[in-house]
Image (tube, rainbow, N blue to C red; front, side):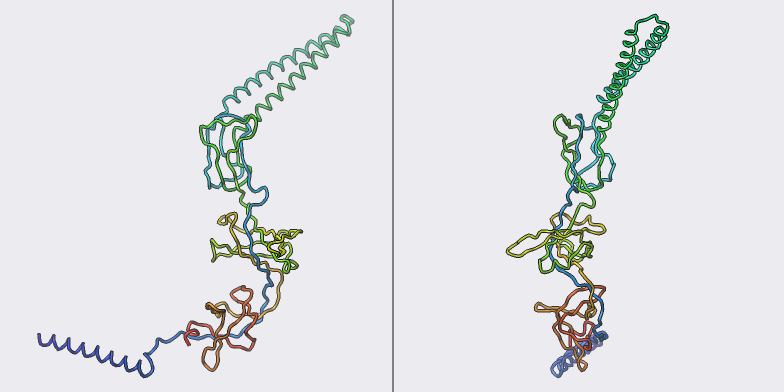
Length: 357
């Protein structure tokens, strides 16, 4: 028991001594700090960067990108294969209309065609018989003319019967409604079991927004529009995905400007490259249009620091870090352009310890 008490007293004494030593070090010069990581020193480089125009834009649907699909025949909806938000490929079956009445009409039209085929065959036989008799001068010329007219009339009825079959066959094909484009279903306005009437107007079944439906429209100030041309590379971001960068190219520039709050702006239409399914119409975008390439002074992105006031870097000066405010420009390939604040002879510090010194 006595031994245990002695051990506890020794431990308490050690803790007290350690605390006292820490207090003394802090009073004399501070507690020892954890060793910082290695400092890297780099020099600003001259590299080719993009000259760019900054603008804001809005994502919009292209003209004709939204397609309303309807029914050209009346009937009961037997099958409906899409829902709002689903993706559909071009040619896929959207819905089927009850086709029994049209199938019956088609069978009737084909039967009528078969009857008329027999009428034509009979008229040809009669004409051939009269032609033989007329050659022997046994019938009047008028009889031959009547048989010719009868054959022509039967052939005309046959042509009409065949057209009737084609019309009903076409209507029967309309009972299967297919997607005219690949895209996303934006709305569905009918349900399975409903009766649609196409007597006066084509009822809309679904609305499809095409896969390449979105277009970015940027408003560029008149002072910057001179350098913008079709084919210029573009990158942009949206508020919904701030860490993602999307790409595209300028398709055309509006020939006429728009005056907004006394400032002349021109609409620049931009095609979006790659997968844009996450983007939605009416999203606001921050747009950068690359208009040319030029040489500039750059430093690695990790060298750029920022606070509420400005962006800055740390320079190496007699073994210590010296803050230097800078004005930055384009960012590309892991480097940031320095427009003002640095010279090519400066030595820039990289690493977390730069901020601590």
